[in-house]
Image 1 (tube, rainbow, N blue to C red):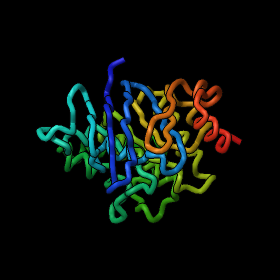
Image 2: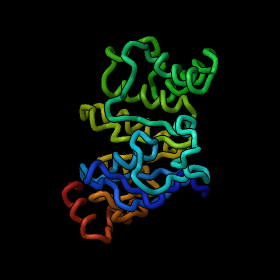
Image 3: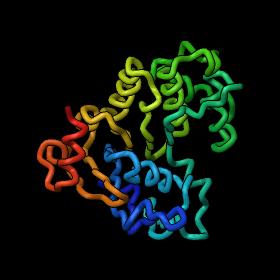
Image 4: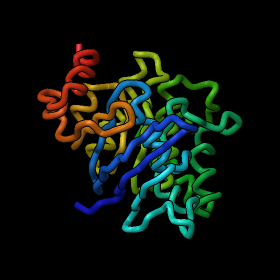
Length: 244
């Protein structure tokens, strides 16, 4: 497997508070890696450091063999290779569904309108939202908004899809429709890095699970090993509270 992202000795401080402490791990092409842990364990901060929404305090993020934290690196260009799906959807409320999925393609990737719309429709079809292409976000449910957000990210043809607790803002009955889309993406060989509290889903789709606690990676491995036979006390305590 070829390594797409290689995190080396990553640290992140907010003032005196160290949120990430010497984090090291890799994401391989075609792999689904899921980050689990309690709120405040550093999972979302790690994801935001990877796409440089937060600037790491120290360490390296190697993407395709180059440290993207070097001054010479084009951060905006790097970000085009990452598809980010947020908790709160982050759609443009003044644009319809189709325009939400084409604006980035046209502005950032410089695709013409016809090509951008063709790409957008392909992914809207994939997530089951093609029939809503003319709808504004305010007319959509939370689950529908999140599926549009996924289609928008996919339309940029990213190397890696990043999901930051994509179901946490949804009503329980809408969680399933988003997880179904993510299962499809995983089965199609997309490279995915997911922060989630959905343990059954994590076990089902992940090639590897990474358990974080207090800013460090405590344990990682195959889902059945980490979730069913954890080696560390901190992992056992977390799963005891979570798996009921």
